[in-house]
Every structure is written in C-alpha cells, then in structure tokens.
Amino acid sequence: MHALTMMDLVRTLLILALVYLAYIDMRTFRLPDAMTIPIIAAGLVFNYLPNLGLTSFPNAIAGAFLGYAFLWGLNFIYRWAKKQNGVGMGDAKLLAALGAWFGLSALPGILLVASISGLLGGLIWLRYQKQSIRSAFPFGPFLAVAGIIELLWPQILQTWFLNNPI
Image: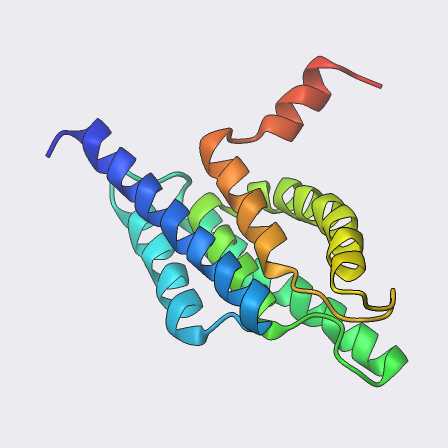
C-alpha cells in the first residue's frame, strides 16, 4: 500500500473512532474502556513505527501519560473541593489517546479548543435538555472534535498565534 494511502486510511479510521466515541458519550455519558484503551495503544504503536508516526515515540508516551494525568489531577482537586466528580475518567483516557496520537505538544491546543467549544456547547446542551447550569454534560464530544481538528489541521492554534501576535 502506498504511504499516502496508508496515512489516509489511518486518519479516516481515527476520525470514525472519535466520532463514534462522541456519539456514545452524548447518549450514555460514558466513554468505554473497550474503545479508549485500544486507541491509546494504537496511537503509541503507530508513533513507534518508523516514517509513519504523527510525532516522536517519546512525545507520544509523554502525551498519553500527561493527558491522562492532567484530567485525573483536575478531577482529584474538584472532588476534594466539591465532594463529587467533575470530569469522568473516560474523558481522561480519551485525552490520553489524543496525546498518544499527537504528542504532548498538541495537548494544550486540544484542551483549549475542547474547553472553549465545551463551554459554549455545554450551555447549548443544558438549555436544549432543559437542565440547570449545574447539571452534567458530556465533555468527550468536545475532546473528539478538538482531536479531529488537530488531525486535519495540526498545530493550527500555535501557527495562528505566531503569525498574528496580539
């Protein structure tokens, strides 16, 4: 198989997996380990292969580890302060998967896009569901969209900010 064709296939499969995870999370408020853990492993294996990876293997390992650790730590602090979970561990595993595919350097942009779209989309979701502002809403779809943006337009935020200083 030609290298470009292989890369297109990999991108398509990753996008389909992220869209499916977003759909599951919207319907069930769950991101199943049966999907997130294999995506983490696939990202690490893909970035280990020579001439195919989206980032270096050490960057992918750091992205997976710190992606999970960041949301786990955020939830730990929230749970300590509010006595309830604020972020699901499925979201942490999905961010770890995105870190495994795109590396540590992509995580800030992914989190920024997911957080801003999650804030706006969450308010729309809660209004549509006729729930209060304190009700939970799924964050996985926003992580998935941010991951797709990173896959199709890598490092778009960093490039934009470097070319358009504020």
